[in-house]
Image 1 (cartoon, rainbow, N blue to C red):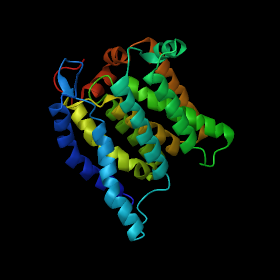
Image 2 (tube, rainbow, N blue to C red):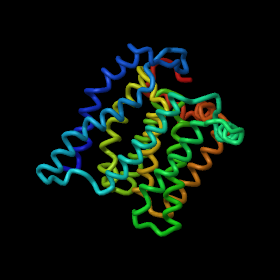
Image 3 (cartoon, rainbow, N blue to C red):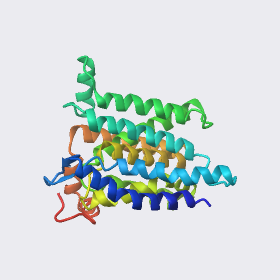
Length: 277
């Protein structure tokens, strides 16, 4: 029964993603990707749609026949992931010229509206809320919140090439699951992770772009996976790594670093159309 939400969400994603992407393209909701191709945007809405569709039979079944379908953490996962997806959609629709922490900071200090600042504050509020009754001490609570929020943001920085963000999620999830030899976090996240992988395949093959709605959601899953799978020491190490990559990405190009590193370049290009960047 643990795998049922993942399987239902997978089927839902396979069914709803193609028509949603066709609808986006038909309505002129497209954006130019790194090659200059016009692609349906934001494709990440298909992840949200698949999750909501999957919840119809799953929630009804869980209530009407008293089936224990959901992991205890699934509610937190759904609330946080869909919340940051909404923040990402606002950014996709209303973003101005500001980019990066410095750009958004200047906009706010100048009295302007910044979707990036809204994402940062909104993600923090959601993280504080969903982790608030998880049984952490104050120090553990603040550590988990910081890791969750910064990881969510990091995946926006990664989402600069087709499939990169979802590949990073898949590698992270595989490493955490095999390293801890515990599938519990996978089943807690599966309702959203399965649609993310489906839409991520379309992103990888350059048939859509995730947009911030998708990148935020994928980053939320990565952050939640770290929080659910790691003890305090592991979370502290993960936070240091995430913070270091985030600071690097603020001042340097992560894509350029990937291109200079043969192993990363090879992994990054797997499954992508044509030559890598």
